Image (cartoon, rainbow, N blue to C red; front, top):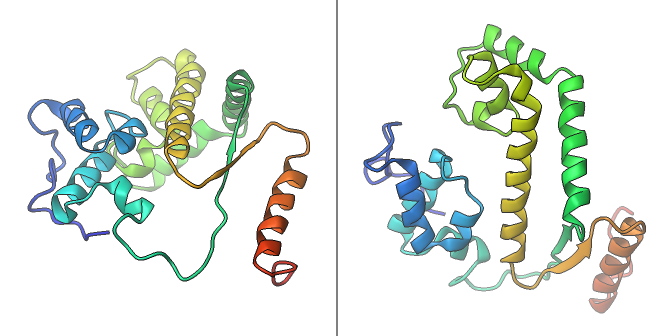
Length: 205
């Protein structure tokens, strides 16, 4: 992965380029549709980095992560993707989780962080899902009554981008993460993988 180069990074000064970040997101979609699909059009930092990598390396971020153009690693790896077979169940779990986060003191946590540190809305930590929506509420940009709905919607969008990213990966064994015997199924696949390579069990287990 090439090192950052402020001289060519779009919007390196922290200001949105001409046309805004959605325009650069559209440019990224033409160059690297897989990376664009998993990024929010407003995610300035990651859009900037993906375009910067392409301009520096001449290859897309997706190709670099996939290892295209590099010799294969000197070891075998088993890639397993845990993907839900029922999107409705995933959405229900996301909703339950965000409500649990609020109940555990998410808003109070952000209030405390703002009081102790010099934070800004543009920092990566405050742009994270959940934190961003709480920040908007504390700044008065959105009513508190809509915080749960906004946080849940943002988490669902993130999950959708993550699934898009996983489904673009090659040579991945996909397992339904909602199956009741999930741990047993994954353990079995790992054991078969090791057995094919003459390894009876993982070290230290």
